[in-house]
Image (cartoon, rainbow, N blue to C red):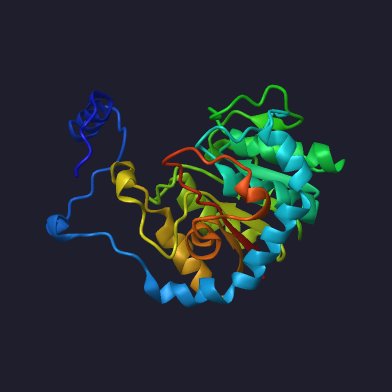
Length: 277
């Protein structure tokens, strides 16, 4: 069922189409009415092959269960009672940081994910330095030991990415819009090729090998088309995929610590972790 047009979205559209301030993209395509989103079954073997690596991170979450349980009880600043970065995404990020102990994390798009990674650093007594690039984080970073650059990616110092080494993390939760000049365009086609082998890469809001949820249609996300091309190219190793794990591995009754962690109704678990070969 089509999503009702909000006044805000209508204003953005009119401003863009009538030559005012550009607040989005309009792409003419005469056959648009015939387009129907579909999943990507040809990618499924890649995810099936990665199941042992996915299980490894699930085991790492269990190893962190005492700390995750404390977070669930309100001993933050990280918190599970939100749907921006829910249960499996949050537990995976926490366990990934505790397990790999990166020296540096550079995060594009910040908020609840930052809180979980910063808490993992604190709980593990790690020397990790976290740098956040986000003009408007989804959750306050004020009480976190992070360096926050309140700028768009285009204005960030490129040396931040060039300094990442094997085992470090590039955490991407950006605009999700792949158009020439957007942050997604620059990240996938300019930043990622420069990263050192062994760098860990996270991309959020990825539901491969499925299509984007219909309720997201109004957002116009298209980033996972680039991600799909990336994972089949062989240069990146799949380490974890929250959506696939939730759908194909956990079933309706998660076990262990995941059974104790809250998942808000309607929340989508969508983290994808890769390692550059």
